[in-house]
Image (cartoon, rainbow, N blue to C red; front, side, top):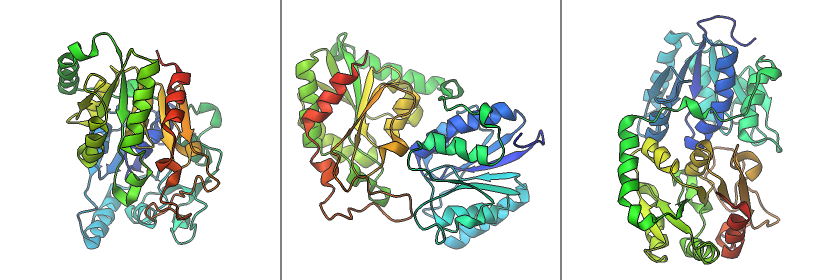
Length: 365
C-alpha cells in the first residue's frame, strides 16, 4: 500500500496547465481510495487551474505562486521554504518534462519524489533527481501514464481506475447561476436545437497556439455540419488569449448559426459545457475539460500526439491529416516548432470536410 502513514502528505506539481491537471485526477482519485488519510497539496501558477483545484474534493490545499512573473531567486526561496512542510511525496504528473519542475521537486524536500522518465533529454532535464520514475510509453494516454506512476511507487495495480472522478468537482452556486443566466439569454436562439460547444484557440505559451485549426477552415467545417444537421447550433467559447481567433471564426458564420460565450471563470465554463450536447476543438485545455464533463468530442490534432492526449473517457473522434512527420511534438522545455519546415501544414491544411465527417460519424445525442 502506498503511504502507510494515515497522515501522509503529498505535494503535487500542477504547473503545466489545465489539461495535464485534469489528466492526473483519475490517478489522484485512485490514490485517495487506497489511502483515505492522504493529505494533498496542489501547487499551481495558472488562475484557471487554481480555481478548478480549489473546488475538487480530492485536493486539501492549493498553493498558487506566479513563477512566470517572479525572479529565479524568489522561486528558489519559495521551494526551499516548502522543505519545512516535510512532505512525504512529491509528484510531477505526466507531461511535465522540465528541468525546472524536477529541480523544484528536489528543492522542496519530499521524502519520495515521483516523475516520469521521458524519451527527450533524460539527463538534461534532471529527471534522475526523482527516486521513482515510470517510463514514458508511446502507446499510453496521459491518464494511464499517471496510473503507471502510482503503480511504480507501490500502489497495487488492482486498485487503479482510469475513470474520470466527475463527482469530485463542485460547481459553486455563483458559477452555476452565471451559466444559467447565459443559457437563458440564448433561449430564443437555441429554439430546441442541440448546442455544440466549439473552441478555436489554445494557450499561447510556448507557441501552443500554432497547433490551432485556422478559423476560416473551422467555419467551413461548421457550415458543412449545419447543412447535414440543421438542428445543430454552435456556441463559440473564448478567453482573453484566443479572442482574435474567435473574432475571425464568428465573422465567417451567420449569426443564426453561432453565438459567443466568454465565461468569467473555468467553473462557469464547466457549467456551460454541462448544457451542451458535444464539443469540437483543438488539442487544448477546454477539449479536456469537455471530456471531463462527459461531452462526446471531435479533437483536431496537428503536431501533438493523440495517443497521449486524445479525449478520455467519452465517445470521440480524432481528426488528423496523417503526414509522415506527425506527431512531431515531444515533451520538453522547448517551444512548439515545425521541424519539417512546412509551417504546421499538419493542422493548417486539414480539410474541413474531414472535420464535418468526423462529427457526423460521432452522432452525438
